[in-house]
Image (tube, rainbow, N blue to C red):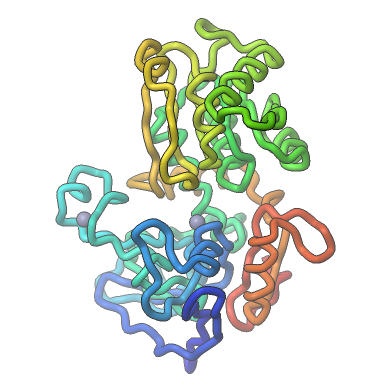
Length: 375
Ligand SMILES: [Zn+2]
Ligand SMILES: [Zn+2]
């Protein structure tokens, strides 16, 4: 335990490898030697824009938050973990005292210390300190890559299983077939969905979704010149419903729509596609403001919900579903990089494909001195 190389964002498009002190842990924390970290859209966004909403990078920050690793040290009050355990790390430490924490929605804690959300450092370093109770031992048959993927899977579990309270024999449409959208489809399928419809503007992604978890796919038509977005969305919703035999109510209606794209026309189309009395969950972060057909939403008593990160029970359910073989995370990992190649990993994620033209779903960066091929 001698050094702590870290991948640090100093400013817009300004990243550097630097040594940081090895973190000191408190009694109820563990020190994890980070082995695998998935790159998320938010990490890339901080790199290219220096901010997400009100979160602004004002001082150098270690990137990365989708991680797994091996425990290097445990605090004296830690009971259930030991040195050498392979773990998934839930990257948000909360205060446990505020109203949100005490009411079981700790993702809304005002004092959350979330990895790689300014001003807090992330996990792309050799070591990361974390409270033991949000560090989960991985079953032996799961890989450390699976462990890193528990983070985006927990985002999907929170939206589908927790916020939307999805049940067996219900139908779902997911807008956006990126990693989180695909995982929402996988969660719905694992929970016994009757129908899982994937919507995306990229045919390759739909092909992937069809093989992965979707029962049906839909490619929206292009927008016409000078067409108002809301008019386009009405046309798009009508076509989607006709093409796939979806009705406004009854068993052929859509019980749940999840927007995992953040695009205004997807959100608009989604609220129009949801059945009368159905549920819509906003999950994707994109357009900060959108126009909504509010009267239509009212008259069909659409239930509008929003889903942010993950809360109590989401990580454990993610691990259970993968452990039981109900969700396979392996097809999602398309690119693997060593720690030294972190810049390349970010470029690939940003461009959506590597220089060889291969489309990226999830790129994983290994910890310092860990081979990208060691899963
Ligand atoms: Zn993420
Ligand atoms: Zn709190």
